[in-house]
Length: 165
Image (cartoon, rainbow, N blue to C red; front, side, top):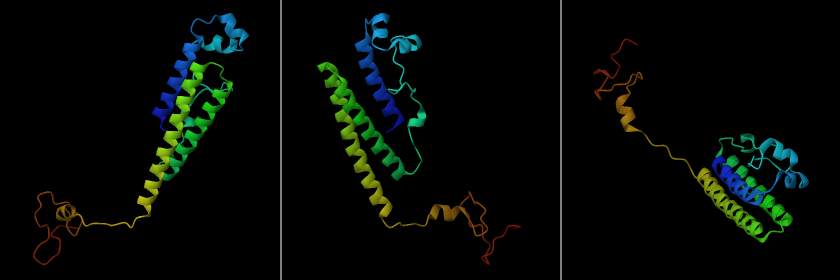
């Protein structure tokens, strides 16, 4: 999952939490076990996991290898899906549950799309490689490796380079 997508999920869940805590008094938050959270963040959304560990870019694993990164994306989508399912289990508000179900379904679709992308990348990587001669590059480079920007033949008549190398 890309960092932008991850932040988008945080924004949607943050909006939901913000709507649920709108108008809630500090005493109500304390009774709900959110007194420490309120002390640090008020009713603002501060991205953290259920144990209170803040969100960090370290949660977004990128290696630069397309297959590895797509597997990371697939795993992230499944983790997000299961998190939404756990939140649905905890919710008794139909409006909240509907939003969570929508978000869970998005994770399922994202997982399917990343799976399709992985298959496409694996097919491309398995194809035979073809290498072509770059004639423009050959015209600009002579036998000694000096670049000839005027596209003139750098070699003299005997086929040897005329430079002092």
